[in-house]
Image 1 (cartoon, rainbow, N blue to C red):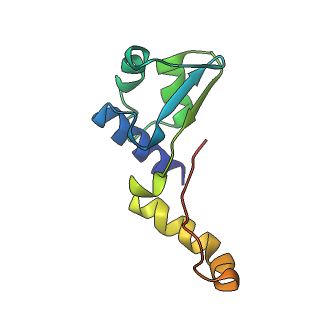
Image 2 (cartoon, one colour; image 1 turned 180 degrees about the vertical axis):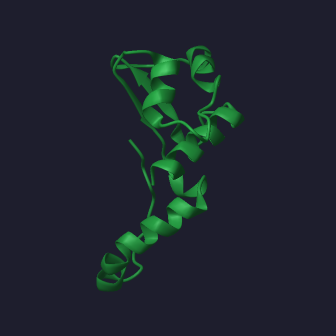
Length: 103
């Protein structure tokens, strides 16, 4: 799943948008649109971890990334999450929407 999340972050960096609720917090403060440009460049490489990309991009500061509706940005993640919650859906029935919120 980490690869799927990195793929979503790469997509957000490429799009350079806060679409889908992409938000980044550093030391408890949400970054502005201008500050997000530092996050967008360079996007995570396919060969690096979230930790190494964040360290290169943000440094040693505490940070958080929030992505709403992650299922719209990565089909593989959507399939995996659907599989994981399928027992709940079988029990409750399709009475509600399922949205993926990543922290």
